[in-house]
Amino acid sequence: MDVDLDNLSVLAPAKRLAEQALTELLSPDPTVRNAALEALRPRDEDYGQVFSPEVADGVKQATETAWQRLSPPRVGPRTQLQLGCTLAEHINQSGAFPGGYKRLEGQVQPGRVWVLFRFAEPGSRTGLTFDGLVYMGAERFAWFPKAWRGVPTA
Image 1 (cartoon, one colour):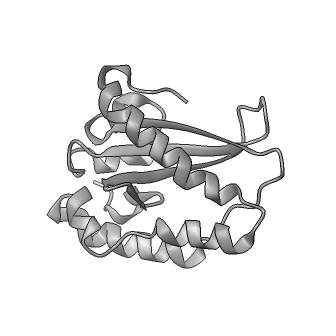
Image 2 (spheres, helix red, strand yellow):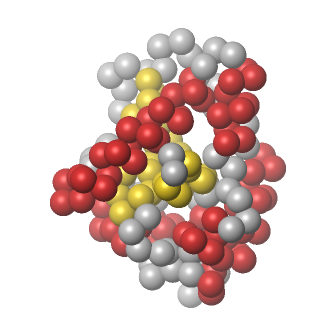
């Protein structure tokens, strides 16, 4: 997964923190995995800080629906974390995020670091891939899985 080298000074610290937060999802202890997942749940105020007012309510509704089905990923003892980061304004240019993010073009607040992550076996380029993790600052992330589902198609 690629890193946006033009913005490395912003992205590198966020990537390190994301790696720390997401590594807990690999714990063999289900209590640790569940707590790590719950720590990523967006707070009500996060939506307005990440999305434009025009789409924040729709994204909130879609995200809350997604969270009703979320559980920590089932991973093996050798599973590794792979991740990539970009700034909100570069999501679609990065080519790494799913095509649905085109619906969020111009609807995300610039300057936020967005993370795409994958749990995979060593040496594998495939695995469980997830999107929509956003660095909120103060060493906290909020996960908006498939956030584009909250934006009507044009």
